[in-house]
Image 1 (cartoon, rainbow, N blue to C red):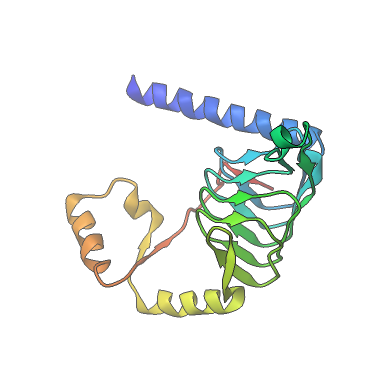
Image 2: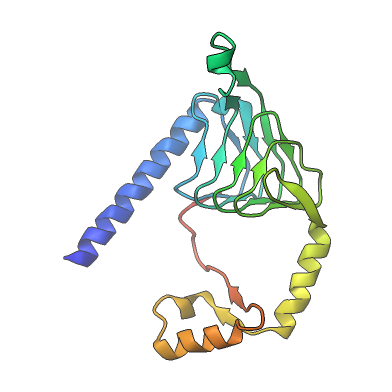
Length: 194
């Protein structure tokens, strides 16, 4: 019964996700190919025609993309700032990040979790913070991690699906002095738009 209920909840979540996305696209949102938008991403639905997303982009849960800023509304006699958001190709936006109106991001940009993007992010950059600031070059960041993948422990994503206590202890031990890597999701990821 529990499994059936969880399956039903997952199907409803997916259906709601598709409905919201269709509404945004109908309102003018431009989305490239191979874009992953997790179900808890909020795209400014009223102004989605001002938002464009390039190819090969990913948005983690909790990301908020705004094309309007109503902070001035109460103090200016009801005026709200509205501006475009242009997210170029190959951009990753980490969990709970906020993208404010009037910015261009990328291409080839990594936005770390919890960041607030209030200015343009130059190509080939990694940014973090509130407000988001450049901390590394995108290609150097990836090269560093590719080297570390060859040196560190690597697990398959499936290993974490139902980990044993022994497995959990192994991961805890291996992460005491740093981190390990997980080889990602395989198959048709339900939140990717082709």
